[in-house]
Image (cartoon, rainbow, N blue to C red; front, top):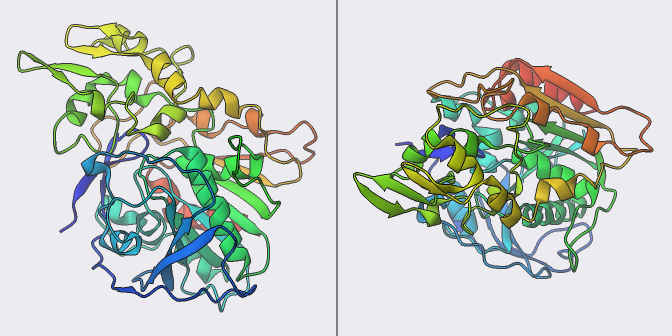
Length: 417
């Protein structure tokens, strides 16, 4: 039976994990690469058969200084096939999965690399996306792109809320492996936080040290519901903290309260909060939108939640504290535009209601989670030398359906050219 977990960048809706049987791992073969060996610093850990892909490979990056990323017990991967590929539900920080589309060898079209968002994986995001609505039979972008003759690949990250700099490195590694086996530049398609990861790679937004810089191996960038100017859902909707502090829901979304008054007693919830080391991505994507879309004063402990301090029923360290813990990521990202010559399309959804979700983002125009102004933000992506404007598309979809509705499958496949 499918298990229910919180999903999305803030856990504002529930997600059903794919119920495919666990695939049997097979001994990791020597990679059959065009250059005859694995790229330097990368090691093939294992390869498994897949229900949806030609195969899934687990790779280890041995060249980068990855630090251990802690995660909550319920923030671990739950999809059996993903667990089998990683070799467990708590992968090493240096490991990532590379998924090969069933027709990657026979198709001759564009190379497309799909990048999923927070609390997700490539199986759910691209092979069975409608499982979010209880239907695993509807195809996703994997099939739609392959039906158009394209060669499709995807990544799965080890941590559901991992450091975005690490995820950009996994993407760079995956592209290097693919380039050893399939010729041509790639089209990057990223959903939600995955769109930020794809943008980071092409924009050369990397930490100091031994991290991979952009190699010019991308032909086109397409982002779908990516919070290009960040988001603040966890802080502007503090009522969700009550759901997140419950044992069955505290896993896949961060609280904005580090202490909660529950049943007359104060409970320390720091480990479940956005201030802990369990949610680095959530700290990085934060941006305070209250100057543009004011927070409702009727929200529980609205002032102290946003600014920090002791409220009637909670204690918060405040959004500025969380942003600082994320290294003021969104502000720093503004200084790294996309290369001027790279075609870019940003897609933003405008439908706020999400099926089976009682409350979504309605403080301003949004897709139910990310403000339209954030997903459709192009100023920070635009290089001064750019001649072709960045294409911005608004679609009548929410944060969930924006990757797999029939209209979106037609739209996105039409953009890959």
